[in-house]
Length: 78
Image 1 (cartoon, rainbow, N blue to C red):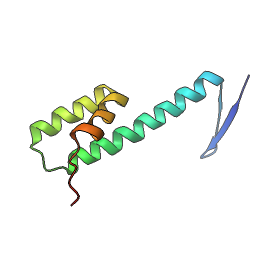
Image 2 (image 1 turned 180 degrees about the vertical axis):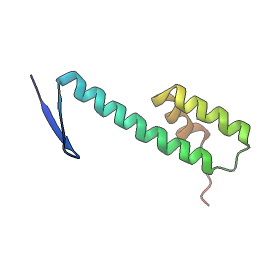
Image 3 (image 1 turned 60 degrees about the vertical axis):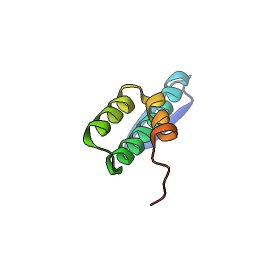
Image 4 (image 1 turned 30 degrees about the horizontal axis):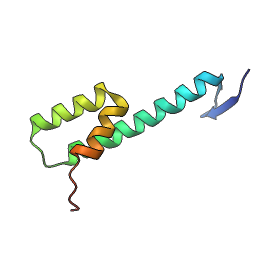
């Protein structure tokens, strides 16, 4: 049973029920990871800390990015 049809740049993608949720979670994880990595790169931390934080974000997609954004992110507004 097809529940969604997506047209993007001339491509037609038909998604089944399980594929739709997996696709949405994958897109959400990618957006969250990109935001967290860009925030790490802009931070004033030393390079070793940046490498460790980016490894955590990339190796554990939802947990790593969420952990960084809520626990390790600089709280100061500049």
